[in-house]
Amino acid sequence: DCLMASDKAIELDAALGSHAIQCRETQGEESDKFLSYFKPCIIPVQGSFSSHWRRSGDECDGTTMFRCEGEHVARLREVPFSRSSLDHKAAFIVDTPSKIFLFSGCNSCIQTRAMALDVIKHLRENRHCGRCEIGIIEDGKLASDSDAGEFWNLFGGYAPIPRDVPDAANGGPMTTSPKKLFWINKRILVPMETHVLEREMLKSDRSYILDCGTEIFLWIGMTTLVSEKKTSATALEEYVHLQGRSSIGRTVIMTEGHEIVDFKLHFQHWPKNVVQKLYEAGRQKVAAIFKHQGYDVAEIPDDKPRQLISSNGCLKVWLVDRGCVTLLCTEEQEQLYNGDCYIIQYSYAEDGKDYHLFLAWFGQDSVQEDRVATVSLMSSMADSVKGRAVVGQVLEGREPELFFLVFKSLIIFKGGRSTAYKNSILQKSNRTEQYQKDGAALFRVQGLRPDCIQAIQVHLAASSLNSSHCYILQDGASFFTWLGSLSSPSDHVLLDRMMDKLCPLKQSLLVREGSEPDRFWTTLGGRSEYSKEKCVKGWPTDPHLYTCTFQQCLFKVSAILQ
Image (cartoon, rainbow, N blue to C red):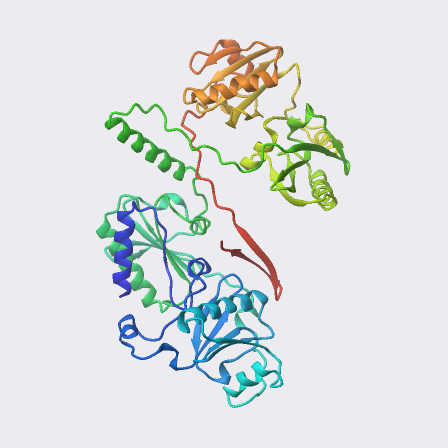
């Protein structure tokens, strides 16, 4: 049955384009992500599927007992209807023909109790047609409570529950198993002896198994046939069973180009542009199909930007210097320096309510002293406003779309004005690049739409150019506007608008890639190689929320699934 399920999963994935991640889940050891798809949870039924349909009589004739645990998703399993099944760590559901009881252990968390109550509501509606009472019992309450007395009578009377035994897994230090990499050759696993894993070891016409102890990965090359993928999945199943690890850890199957982050982290170096190339290839195939059908496709338009925030808000920007803030005027608040830290407040009204967005922006060359002060000052400012305040930290080069939308237009210069930054520059032997009004500078122009554009000062060198972008080159009082050969007409509109912002009274010389004058290259320090590949905007990543806790001197991070 396991092999059949693996084969059908391979066939389904191949029919859908071989882009999916396949995860092997075992009852009792399911991942939180898998359980999050089932609402309120998976409710196990004893027996097989066919025997379940052959059952006769009412499902509510007997008494069933479930153990419910978990903080973010409910993990439910049926336990023997006995007092010895109870403990203080979990919540327990006792389903009787006339009443459903919830027993909450004194050491169970409030999230577990809430999820157990959702399960009870589901059982009441689906097993009892809504005609059933619910009794809530807190651990430690004696039979004086009516629900507690009725609950304990099911077990023959009240008796204390033994103390919980600490989990042995949390007591000792965490150990890591050595990584094992196998090449699959006709269901035979060939070990690959290596101390360091490199991406170049994986060939597109082969499949590999990476055993990391608590998790096992099957990597399938892009050019492998469906029959070879099935053989690899069979080899994986056999390997898991031979190792006696059918119910321990997790198993993940993925195709080349669609690897998950957990898999990439086991390799010393992993290229970052693999998905970009696959995405670009897909765009070209779609364009070819349209052309074959008679459509003139010059460029596939990007999706229209979403309305992430109201555009009628009020923007304020403060420069952080020596533990104090200085409010910038309207002209200066759209000009940031990468050696400084800033606090941005964007206030707007929506549905009759006031909202405040506070962002701490850290320039790439900013010093730690200013960063610490910025976070502290921003928290104090957010606490002092009325209405709903949201705070966040933004690093230069990693700004989300929301950050640029509140600015409309933004210019980021090299250099800084804070005292701490200037002192750090004096202590360095090699001075960093600083923007001078009458000097030379190179700006990359980008934007989400015509009313939301940015100019980012980059290193003054030809290697900073990219055929996918447009640039403004300043040489004293002269300006060049450079159009990359792969840039779009919409990029040219953004370039013209930014030129009016950066130097409104100056006339620039339009230069197209491939027809640059000698003075252009002289200002950049001479000709050199630069990227001439199409830059493709990657898919936006989903936000992730994590909880961080300390348990017995161990720092644990777990993802909260949406």
